Amino acid sequence: MELLPKAMASFRMRRTASSLQRLFSSLSSQRRLILAATSCSILNKLFDLAPPVLIGLAIDVVVHEQTSWLSRLGFSTVPSQLGLLAVLSFLVWSAESFFEYLYGVLWRNLAQITQHNLRLKAYGHLQNLEMAFFEADSSGRLMAVLNDDINQLERFLDHGANQILQLITTVLLVSGVMAIVAPGVALFAFLPIPVILWGSINFQRRLAPRYREVREKAGELAAHLSNNLGGMFTIKSFATEAWELEQMRLRSEAYRYSNKQAIKLSAAFIPLIRFAILFAFLAILVIGGLQAWKGQIAVGLYSFLVFITQRLLWPLTTLGHTLDEYQRSMASANRVLDLIDTPITISEGSMPLRLDQVRGSLRFDNVDFHYQDRAPLLNNFSLDIPAGCTIGIVGATGSGKSTLVKLLLRLYPLSSGRILLDGQPIDMLRLRDLRRSIALVSQEVYLFHGTVAENIAYGSPEINHDTINKAAVLAEAAEFIKALPHGFETLVGERGQRLSGGQRQRIALARAILKQAPILILDEATAAVDNETEAAIQRSLLHITKNRTTLVIAHRLSTVRHADQIIVMDKGRIIEKGSHSFLLNQSGIYTDLWRVQAGLRTDELLSI
Image 1 (cartoon, rainbow, N blue to C red):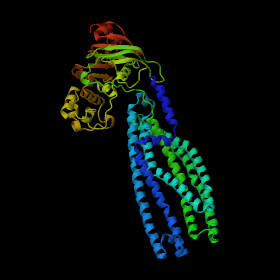
Image 2 (image 1 turned 90 degrees about the vertical axis):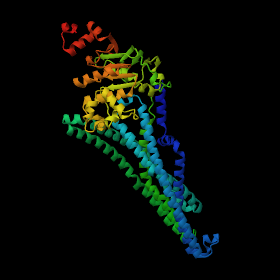
Image 3 (image 1 turned 135 degrees about the horizontal axis):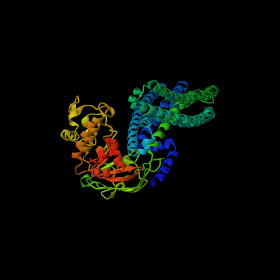
Image 4 (image 1 turned 120 degrees about the horizontal axis):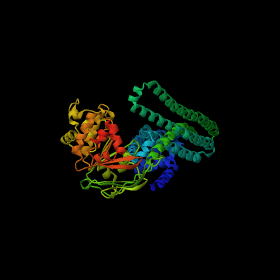
């Protein structure tokens, strides 16, 4: 926990870096590809700017004939000069097309690689974050970051990066050439450039917060949509379709309005810039024309200046669209990189743990814990669980039963204290090894969209069908599975919605059995099932708990009555512990709970 403040400070420092700097830092592994794509974009633009030069030379040949500029290269006749221009034009157009093909391929490949790598990096980092992060965030927003925002970056690298590079190349090259060949005329072409740059920077500064708001509204819309799709059964059962449609309309309207405000500002950029460009073009047209008419500059040079000025200034009209795309992309980049830079508070241990050497003894040693922004739940909690024993844990809702499981799996960091597995603190063990040694069946079973067999074998894809079938038999699931339309190859649907709650529980139990972990945890596994399913799970437990350390967390006391020891918890403390018969004789909280659940009078209870 002491590492968290340092991690958060580092996170805030990374966020202060510019969006572009953060993005290119994340692309450091693709430097060669970026360099190659950048070179091809610049070379393409150099050849794209060559035709005005060729036009100026052609006019110079027609006007001056044998005394033209090309005659200095040894081409004395007009046909030879025009032939040379034809060859040069072919080479220029060929080179331009070649480098256009190359930069198209390279930038698109970079976009695809970046999209792929960032999505994997973001998702991989997401999996390493503690559960508190997911409780504070929404799956819809995270989906928007992993999908929409990364796709926005792909679109920018596909087109926007090349446009920015070529625009910079055009301004630098054309300005330099014009300053050399006609400094007096070039001055008028340069006059609107500061105005355009100032306008661009000002628009960019004003657009940035608007596009941040657009991405935030997009995330909120995606979160609400994801939430509603997951709760469609509840929406239908409460007949709230019209109300939910109105809520969706409000969020969609907020997203549309934020986009409208950004578009209103970005759309005003190009018309304003065109007037600055028009001034420069008219100045070159009139002043350059007068100088050519008076013989102060050559006609070919005047033609070159007119065409090259257009090549210099008109691309600046696309600056608004390019900046618009850039700001959208940087807003998306910040969201993706913020996710990647989110500090991980669950540190990885370095000590390996071999499953065949795990005995399964557990010890909670003076453990303190509280959920974020909530009162302490566990305070100086201690519990010893011998290897191979079956421990029942019961208590009221909120007493901390399931929290023990989450802490054992290291889904949350401890406030203080230690948890030991076979005498080793679990924070020193490799997370993967620790979690591979624990099989969990929870109350809220999650099945992935796929077949029954795939869900039972989840985490163990190399397991054969016979092993899967044996696990299903032990979980008393084989009978109903064989009655399904396609048996083990039946698709369970998203979250297992094609199966009943009891069927999902037994598939989850089969999945836990197949894991062959030395520690088995049943966290309210029978709380939401019928009596028949509970009886089936009870029969299964008689077989699968042998030679395993088993923790059975339950509201139904019948589930834990055969445990070696039963722990009764209240407000994060152990208030009673012992066997079922011992606790009944104590006439304490466990006795009261048993009497309520069994519907017995006191005299009947003592006769059990």
